[in-house]
Amino acid sequence: MKTLRLLLALQLLFVSTKSFALPSAGKNLLISGPHPEAVEAGLIIADQGGNAVDVAVAVALALTVTGPNYASLGGGGFAVVRMGKETQVIDFRETAPKATNPKTYTEPGKSSIDGGLAVATPGIPAGLVALHEKYGKLAWKDLFGPALRLSREGFRVTRKWVDVVGNEKSRFNPKAKAVFLNKGQDFAPTEIQKQPDLLKALLLYRSQKAKGFYTGDVAKDIVETVRKNGGVMTMQDMADYKVRWLKPIETEFRGYKLYLMPPPSSSGVVLKTALALTEKLKPFEKPALGIEESHLLSEILNRSFRYRSVLGDPDFHANPLEQIFASANIDELVKGISTEKAQPLAPLPDEVPQAPESNETTHFSVITKDGDAVAMTVTLNGNFGSGLASDKYAITLNNEMDDFTTKPGTPNMYGLVQGYANRVQAGKRPLSSMSPTLVEKDGKIVMSVGAPGGPRIITAVYHTLYRTLASGWDIDSAVQAPRVHHQFRPNTVFIDDKRFAPEVLDGLRKKGHEVKPGWQGLAYGVMWEPKAQRLEGAFDARGEGAVGGR
Image 1 (cartoon, rainbow, N blue to C red):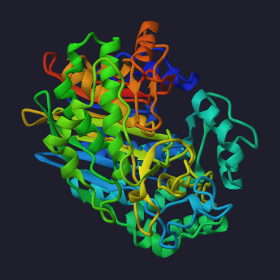
Image 2: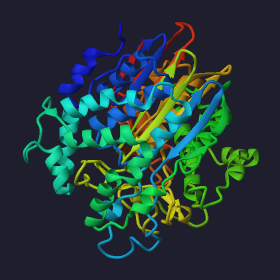
Image 3: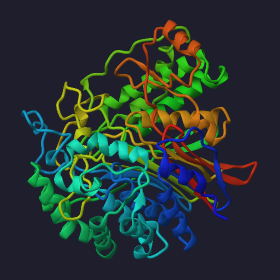
Image 4: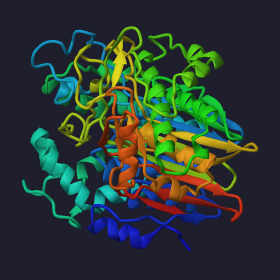
């Protein structure tokens, strides 16, 4: 019997959010993700004998159909993967076209948010192929069935999807309007949305794999659309795209071993620093969700996020990881934290206002009973990326160039703090907060977790790890719990104000924090429950999602 929450899936077709999420469970496999149709796609492939990677590829393909505002063949991402005893990171982040440079976006009218100049060379198609070629079990062509069906027969749009389209349609090019509007009007919730042009692209991708995608008719369609709309991408940019296999950042926390994202994601650095400070300061010994715990968590995140400003693509920049992780540095950070009062931090050398990240990313997690696991986060950066859908195949195109420090000293679309290490350079990958994470206990993966939400991705993952590994909460309670977020700049604690008691907010202000309400990202996770001898999963009640298993 499937444990996919079919009732919840039906609810998601009719409403934008749910009020509460109960964990689903599985003995053999569990998937947590942002859309019930995508989770179902993974279960279908599992039933056909697919392994964790096959399942992950099928989920990702389905999301390119059901979530074109955050997942697309025109986007990029990261994954942390455990197959057998091997744990690796695959980086399929988008890259800057070769004709871009640090001055590209300093001229009037040169936008890193809208139009062709905002589009970086996509990485998802190469990433999924590379992941499957290394670890997949089933034939490549056999992973496309659910995605092809969804694009051909359509899927029911949710209220949230309708609202997002309504908010973004003024940015759409004519092709995007033709695809994502219903004869020029907004779709209504529960109406069927089909994607016949994307279906053609998926069929070509299935038959030609990455080489065909990056050198053939689909690449030509993407490049022509980008250049028609003011961009500089070339066919050579597409042909030259390569994924990178990287070693994860590893750390120990409360008896667990964690595998975190290295640069060009900042998340591994921030999370490893935050967890080291957590071990020293022990906020978990304070009353949960109280003033003292919330204060310490805010101060921990403030200091950990500070290092984001010195990070960049490792192929272009020497990241000072040893200095950041050094015991002496951690001890110095601990000394600067008071239990009584918020302590301001000075900027690091060469710090400039940072390229703020979009919230429109997505994540899903997969674990099997054997401990094989995938944590994958994919993105277009902003909602519907650049606002462009490719003219022939209706592939939504990213605006990932806005994740670079495009105008040093000037905030971009959303709001962090970073330095010149993340300036635009040809072929470079922009810094990210995407945080796919795996957790190991006694040699076996026991958790896969991640989130969308720009810089709040890191906070959502940190809180989930903190609540489960340090406080012993189950995965669903951890995901749904109130959170505090501090990203160093601005010097503000963003808080789930309606989820905390009013006295907690007042107490934080008395300790010197500026406190504002703020969105907290959406966590998706799967965790092995040893007492029940089963996998349990959760998705965030702040948004949409599904959990399904076998």
